[in-house]
Length: 189
Image 1 (cartoon, rainbow, N blue to C red):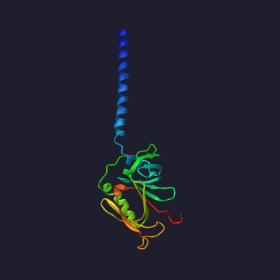
Image 2: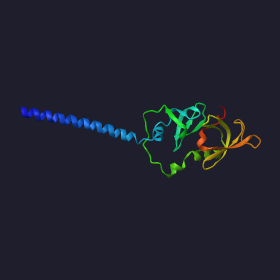
Image 3: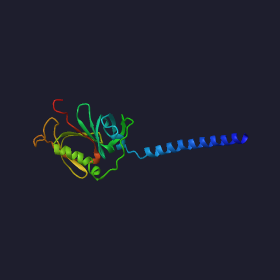
Image 4: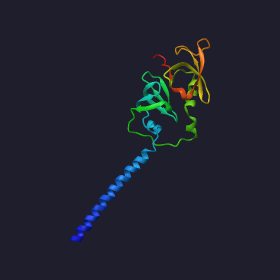
């Protein structure tokens, strides 16, 4: 009888140690998996949600998350303007839910869809924009062209179309100085 109790006790101890080891292994595996998640994956899991971004030099930018690129985010603010935010300027994000999009390896196409390409879309559309810079200043006008590491902005009042007579100057802005590019208010707003 004593041997049976001894063996039962030893089996119970072994089972407890095995269960504890499994819990520790699961926690370690979970931490390792979380360690592989990129901010872009967390943000893609929040598409459609209201977020608040703390950004260098400009403070809070808030809106519904529309899209996430390799180095940019696209928000729609409460006034209906689109705000293209340089991911490198984001210091913190509030409003994320529990969701995370599956990690996707960044392919050649995704690498080409960078901030330069997104700003080139604004230049193509001849959209009047406000450019928010890391020093807290703002510039308004129309993006004329985008180079390898800069954009050229034809400065003019937002309420006037880009015409030669309305342009007060043309300014080159290094892309690393850009925090966000915000479109003008939609017509009728």
